Image 1: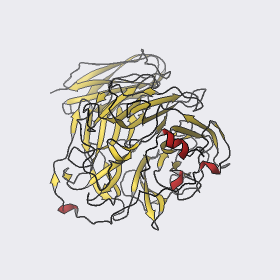
Image 2 (image 1 turned 90 degrees about the vertical axis):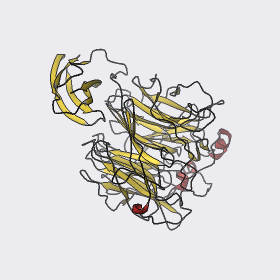
Image 3 (image 1 turned 135 degrees about the horizontal axis):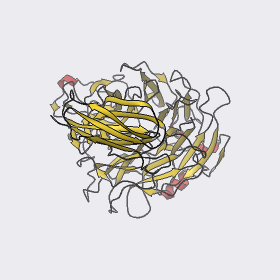
Image 4 (image 1 turned 60 degrees about the vertical axis):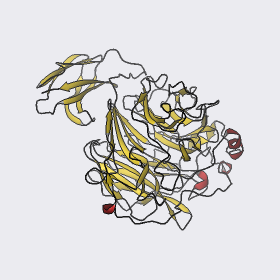
Length: 573
């Protein structure tokens, strides 16, 4: 990701005067939406590739920890699980196999030595739900690569979008694939591209299932005036570039349950959302944008200040509620770390649309600190199948006068109207150390939610250098209703609890629905499925035989008619 000057509102108004960001239908692509100014790239190596023998690098103890129901495991480790001294890893993205969530890949910018800013497409993988990780190295040794974005399709293939440079100044993207059941990457497919790209994989089961969509910054495109592409065939090929109304940047994409595509990002001092209703159809008319509108998040994206003086303070996130679409269309959620009016340098703000993106709520502040001097940066969001919204960020509130940061978390079960008390998930660390000849710790984190909690790819400097971590948070028992309010009728209880050889799980279903009752271990790994069947409204019980299990905490998870509830149960000897 290149580093632009800080987009203050006054300069942004001049900088983006040609973008025409008023809300309007977006039938035709307008040439004036692509700025004509030219700024130099910084997403390029300033130093040559330096081959480094991993075997000769020193080792230290890796940092792994548990805090409450949050567990962090270092990913960029050697075969013995030790930290590799002298390298750097940042800007991580995660792909989770939906056919086997214990199988995951995290990709990142890998710097083999902090003596050079030359980075490559690093990655690590796991098959045990993140308890242990294998770090084979990089996809293409000696090839400059940056800005990793990962996702998984409905068949379980992991897709890795990676920016590279060709012919000195041509910035393009390749997408590599690791099929289900393995971690061997193919040779990659050219996916058009440009600097600060993002990608989403449609795994909704809708008409667009298997489509991949990507967009990037308009004025650093390999195919101007276009800066968006689609693959309609699970990544076998990518179509010619087109533009997006409003030229959003530094953002993300999402696919609604019915296949509608949304692109979201910053446009000067505000944000732009564009929608395509026909991108899901591989055959037929060319992709059209039927909505383009501005969205206020009560501030603007900041960069090159405070805790990340060479990079962004976060990117703009858009997510669709994954539950069935209502009569007004998909419900959408937007979140970003923004610089708000006044003295406060950065807050995490959220907004919601309940009518397919046409109108938006006023922004809501997610962080609950009283400070007006703390940075809440790298705000990141994902949504669980149940509709629970998860948000994490780095926070300096615990270290006044310093940029030392801790990981924080909050969730919402009412569509973002209110948020849980902020929870500190980690000790503080100094983000200003371990720089690999770049004064930043990347530009973003990435997370994926499920009904038990979330899986997070993040970076920190607990070892005195930049390293990548997998975070697994199990969220306490909450119920999310189809109408965005807790459902009082779904009950789940275990007796006895604690138990030694077994326990009886009683549950109540308020209406006829399909019911699943599953058990997971303390890391969120599946243990067994006790119920997967249709049930009439009523009270039921299931026996959980845990005699062969190790002692410790387990989670029983009930899902019925779009409502999910989780209950802790303790196995003792």
